[in-house]
Image (cartoon, rainbow, N blue to C red; front, side):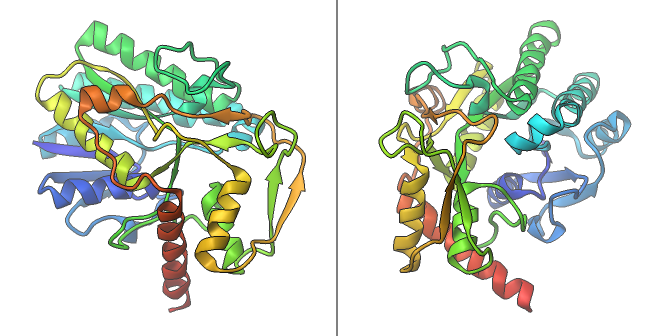
Length: 329
């Protein structure tokens, strides 16, 4: 059996492809390369350039490669951008996911793992937030992902498509072996931005909001190392392949750090101050969000290895230095 990875040339998807090929799985990557990089895809995988909204292409790949499982990462992920262009996000994240699901159902794919987000929770009333809490997204990004979760739930009930939706908290860091990392030059991920600023690739960085009801006034987030997140995907795939029940799982460590905590961690790793400017809040940002992460451990057997902010930051900083050398060469 083969696995189709959509968005497998991107940051998180490329790590999934590495994990699958490391495990000896036949892996097919479908990516339109709008934000991904061909060089980020494991040479052991087959890369197909195309769009997830192309149902005929998806069905032909399923037939050609005997695909039984899809791991779906492709989509748009920038919260403020979604506020400015909601219809673009509903197209990329919802309409095209519907097309991918339709192709999967028509061609007999058994298992579907979806890259969802903690943004479906919006601004939680209490922390940590659990899968049983009512979703209340405050951005089109969060809504677009929640709508896809709902389509998966209904497709499971109607057509028997088995699925797991993994609600990511804040993903950061890079492959400990140095094979992949966050490579988009102008990505908005806080840890990447702080690392780029520390290395002089940006003149400075902005801190959006200092008047939140948090210890230091800045936003609180639950940061998860990308390799631990991918381990949860591998556990989810094994769970479904063994006949486990469909469901939704948070992916986080259950501990939050503020924006200033992250900046200080980057300063420790780099041994120098990170130039930053304090500014107003950004549209669509909740004050804090931390995972209730017991369910993924209990049901999927997930055991994270890199639950340490300093390690996450160190691996991200190492990857930025690698990219500097790569781009200079």
